[in-house]
Image (cartoon, rainbow, N blue to C red; front, side, top):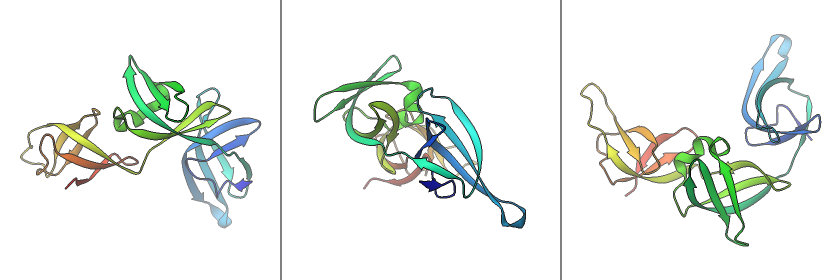
Length: 182
């Protein structure tokens, strides 16, 4: 068991016999040192999102998930196909399941997928990933940075020295440029 204050994004908790994935976590200190924790939770079975507020010392049941390495194969009409390298089992995830992680999926890349009772929960990516710039838009005179598009269709701002076909490192949590690959 964890307290609400110890819970963090990425944890899965059991609340009233339903499993919830914690996507956002904020603590707020109120009067008389009372701390509350506001969480955005994704219901694993229904995929619905909800916001809940807890007292910092409320007890939540922590859930352990299976974590398996999958290879990303392809995307076809909004369906993303992954293969388990050990047993060649394939799973298909919708664009809603994949969410913004689609900007970091390149064919052949390996990722970790969390599951509970063989049901998809979440994709785990490395904090920093390498992407290739396929289009560099012209520099706007008044701007310090310019916009580029990567091989995964992610648009982001980079320094003016980045050109087409350069490889860059991007933070998967903030979607920000980190550095050019040397």
